[in-house]
Length: 360
Ligand SMILES: *Cc1c(COP(=O)(O)O)cnc(C)c1O
Image (cartoon, rainbow, N blue to C red; front, side, top):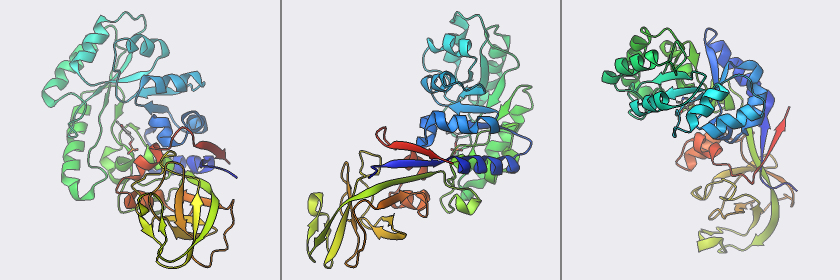
């Protein structure tokens, strides 16, 4: 019997990449594989995608190192820049590309002892107000980077859209894209703006480089649509097994805190999956899981290693039967909405003890 397994469909990854390529035939693709490739397994995902993309992006230096050490040859971009001055020689030695988002980082580069200039993309703030040069700092930071012999030329430009996934805020979205495109006219290096939502929803954000993340994994960035609605194929199916079953009488109180009371005589199934695997405890009673081709509702609080389902009085299920928590036939977008979160968080939350198994 298998415990929790994230089955990763490599063919789906490749098919999604081809669909993305067809939407932005003029752009270079940066595959965003931070956070263990959104829980899908960093190295396996990167090896599968390497022939189909121009670069990879991660958030942290150790993620970039893991890619490098696994033999990835394509460009590796650090979206968050570097956190410590000690990272600068590592970036230089391995030829990583780094976002540079504030003046302190430029000073640190100037003071570093490196023999190979680093590849820098100036990150500007266009409306998210998270990282990046403010409007009145852009010219100065650009000039400092361009005059530094520790920085390779020409420098690139990168930013991030804050509401590309929110159609009702389109006016703010357009304002950000127009400002970015105006600044981009003064740069001769690499220009990179759109994330998944930008690629799908904003033709004027499809810059020379684009950064698909969630859509590569077959998941929609939009609250009102699933990946399948966008023509994508879900890459991850999270599954486990039914490890026990018991008959309970109407009125039986199930699980910690007796949070679910049987409304009729029924059969309870115990599934080997819990919040210790990344299935949120906040999932409400009644969240669907798939067993033997039908949806059955969860019952009671999710435990660390197990959860309960109401198989119904007529259950013919057997111990060892497969249980799908999300993926095949059960969109993760739907499960995330029930947990009051976004599918990004559910797939990223997969814990290290979950087996990752690749197919196709
Ligand atoms: C995570 C991230 C992305 C990818 O976003 P998706 O919505 O998954 O496409 C792109 N750019 C930056 C800066 C990010 O942090």
